[in-house]
Image 1 (spheres, rainbow, N blue to C red):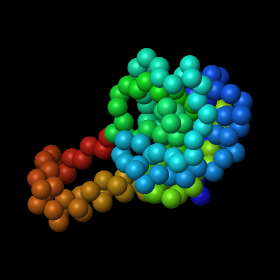
Image 2: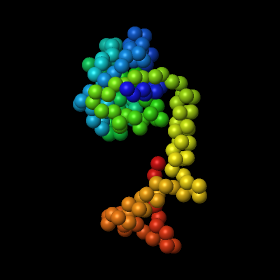
Image 3: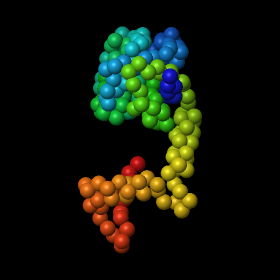
Image 4: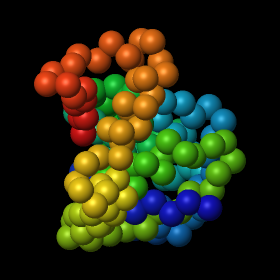
Length: 172
């Protein structure tokens, strides 16, 4: 079982109270047709007819769309930039790493949090990551791992040298 923390989506108020109760209390199962575009869930939610399809709007990773069949889809990194289905909630950034780990048959529970809790969770996650990858002298262990990999991989061994040190740029 995976618990994902969520924030209210832009269309949350348009859904019935029973639907919101189902979102928070139901156990959803990951559908086998999930891919890098989105995690499809098997259990349907009630969708108001007025929300069956909306004008296209910008989408973000973690958005939980509810298409016409009522089965929620959690958008992943390869999602489209726009979408026309209502967004009932959004998985908080601190839990995005769990989305890529979901496999067919996995059970998902949603926990409602507020913005303050979401920001705190992200800060705690970043602090933990920083403590895990920084050693005592402040150098990045990940950079060291890349350098070791570069030594053994001909494609990566062509890193430029400057003042006798390899230059590695890490992007967040």
